[in-house]
Length: 304
Image 1 (cartoon, rainbow, N blue to C red):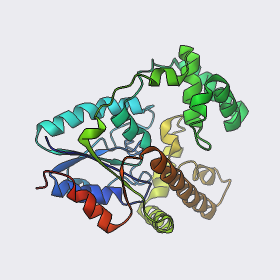
Image 2: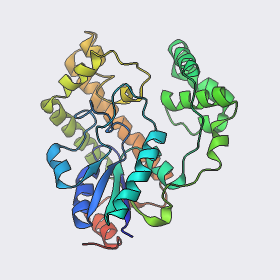
Image 3: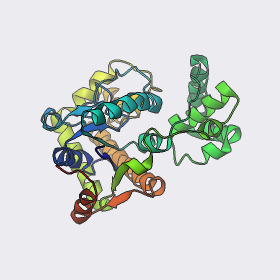
């Protein structure tokens, strides 16, 4: 069986370029493991691979979801499971790459089969957030499911709302559903690396890439989504480059302020990713240098 390769890392760490390089060397096909690159309307904002990059190796699960769809890790797992089987059956290596740690963890550790949450509960929690903010969400989540709430670092309203919604819908904490999970791909079959560049170099890369994204038309892409009046609770609205520019489109802040906020929030997001990956992917190969990249490639079997 061809190897299954996982490449994680914070935004702008060079995951896509390395994945393409590995795909060429190991006869592989790339599978998106980023929660925002699935959306068809987030081409520039999500830093999706370019057309030429996608032509250099087969790519899957990029830009195939409508902005109004509440795409989740469960949707991704159901798609990726069959995709991995298909790629392996054709004698190729699945190469999963992206920055969504929850996707990687669900792939290797399993995902809880939580019942579908009724829409009225979701709307009720959304209204609660509007009235009480993130702090109110955290207080309620800690009351209903303290174990799960304590695992949420910083301000993450979507995860806090998920904890609340699961408890309201099932009368059981989310940890109850997570106890008996089975991996889609056992860790033993995966060759896993997490890119962790030197922090300042990463921040410089984020700033430079954002300037390039602006030149490519990020502003127009964000404005098209702004005019659609999308439900702010939908996952697509978590994209950095939307919430920062919407106040600019409304005339509340200047373009320079919006760009400053987007760059700052991108760096802060990368910092959170960095912390999460180091804390949660403890048995993965940490890759910080070119030598470590080559060492990782050397331990992967079946190089062609």
